[in-house]
Length: 219
Length: 219
DNA sequence: GTTATTTGTTAGATCAATCTAACTTTATAA
DNA sequence: TTATAAAGTTAGATTGATCTAACAAATAAC
Image 1 (spheres, rainbow over the protein chains, first blue to last red):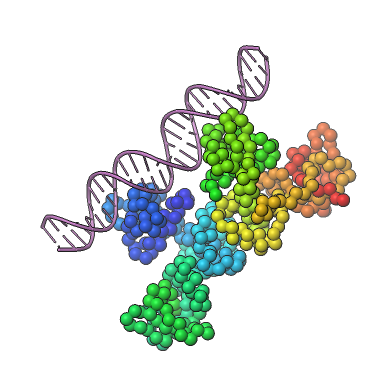
Image 2: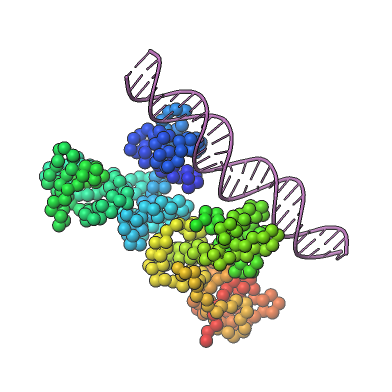
């Protein structure tokens, strides 16, 4: 393993490369709130660990080994979040900060036990997939709510953003995973969508919100 | 809060001062497996935090503030151990290493929730008292088994040593907290004691073992 | 296709936590 | 009570993670 710092860099690297393939040092530095030179020097260490490929002035690419190590950290993070919600009664908006610390605990048994107690969950409280012990995740076929058409009925299955503010916004609208949404209107000029669900029959959601709601089409 | 390193120094300081009142830099250094100069420089920082009183060449004394901070770390450690045993099914010999890491998590809510789920336990799995949110602990009137007289019947209530090897030794003899022990013989020359308990009717325990078993006299 | 802007790199400093070597003070023991 | 041993201190080096300032390369803009 690496240090906690290195683990945080690797996690950021993993997420950025998932989103964009190629990663720049400056993206990494801004994600981690460190200066560019700091990220630059850390990147060289991670190259030495074999977690990424680094060449001067070229974009970074994560290696299979880096992905493997990263997925184990993400596994620990997401299992912790799930445990906090399911076994300890925390709400989905309060678990991230705790999991951010607990994920660095070095004990396979600890996380395997969580996994077992939870019944080997495939997704965390925000709908993100939990890697299994081999780093494998279950991939659902999700699309953004913003891409849905009028009249479609979908299930809210994951969030592509789990900021506290956003989660609190969803709470205030009684939006949680598993809720069935029906698209009853789409505004072309601002991309906002009106949905009905549960006992809400006309809720207007902005484009920004709809971009962060990942849904599954009903078959 | 201080860094994890500082927290570990403070914990060691607290335990040593509990045992002996005055603490020397060298005791601290050997407890933490660092060199004497390292402990020396750290001690100056802890003095700056107001956790201890430091004067050149004089023994160290922990301050009330230091005790308070230390007891909160110990609270987190012992709650974690208890949670691991009671809620997650770990055995008492495997929880220390995990708790040693989890204790540094910075989240009151996390530990308060453990406390609540456990029903506000007063003692950890090794019988050590768990400080409450104000740092208060329940003090039992315990003596070493080695100090007991022939014929006495006592309850095993705590361990003054929780090394893995010792715990495994106790497991192998089916000795656990709450067991009632009857002293059926005492050897003067080596301090060993023969006890009976549960379905063991003649178990010989060395002086060293008896010194680590803290028992409560039955009234 | 030069120039300007953004991005990346190097150099050098700082801070925390550690070490070893050299020296000083306190405690122990002859 | 002085000599020796043990404990404590200071100085100076190292490593990891960070920073700013100065410079270099790649990309974008005209």
